[in-house]
Length: 311
Ligand code: NDP
Image 1: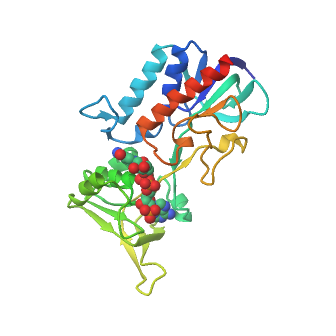
Image 2: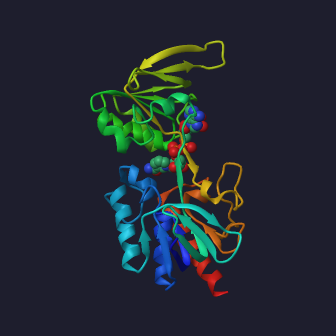
Image 3: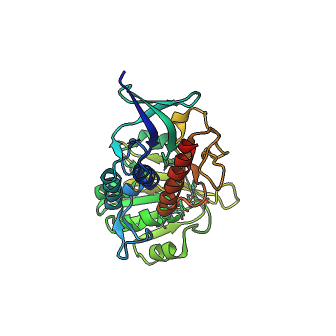
């Protein structure tokens, strides 16, 4: 088991993690950033980012993250692939165990592990995972050219995914459980303007069917009301876009979380319930969940961490 010691361990490689690494490196604080399962985080699964300041014509999400990574490396961050499997926050220095069983000890930790896509919890989602079920249109949309797909959800993500898929698929259904979209007005307009997107309001999914892959969804309209109506919708792909869950399992309950599982921070700081441990980005942000907000909190976490180490 190889052991290393560093002043600050940063866990996660989204805008929060990379920004924290840039600030820590520029403050001459030795740091290692562990990238996690999805280097670059959620933005690598989106298309053009139009709301990150500094890019008047928008920027591809994967490119934006590659630039942030390079910027962190250029100022001295030690960015590494890998996964933090567990972390011991009960004593100093803190000790993180990585896949491969190497251990990194750190005087301070910044948790920036982001959030992962939520699923409805249907057995059929597991059964057809990779066989027609996906939570990432930009990753898997390519396989559905000229086919029929459904996107579940009525928020900005669902609208974005539906719009993206509508340029590939023949027909896109949006399965929305309420009678309205929660998405921003601009996103709603985009979706409404596409002829091959049809929104199924007041509709829930009860299951999927198909022999070798998804061939359709069992839907119910107006569930639990006198107008309740069950029917089957033939589709080739089923995309989830119903929000995200913060990635905190590896913490094993050591930090205080809120009812939804987000890390509780001592606002306006990024301090968590354990001194020397800071949280930044979507893992601690149930409200804003924007790349620019995550980057901002990564900056704050690094400054909080620096003050803590200088105490
Ligand atoms: P949201 O929480 O905003 O929306 C989730 C959607 O999924 C809602 O329509 C919700 O329905 C629905 N939903 C949740 N659970 C279920 C379920 N079990 N069954 C059926 N439907 C369900 O999540 P998003 O991922 O869309 O957005 C997260 C944040 O990121 C938001 O703040 C959003 O504005 C932002 N964002 C911004 C983008 C941009 O500006 N370019 C792009 C993408 C996201 P209901 O309304 O009934 O609760």
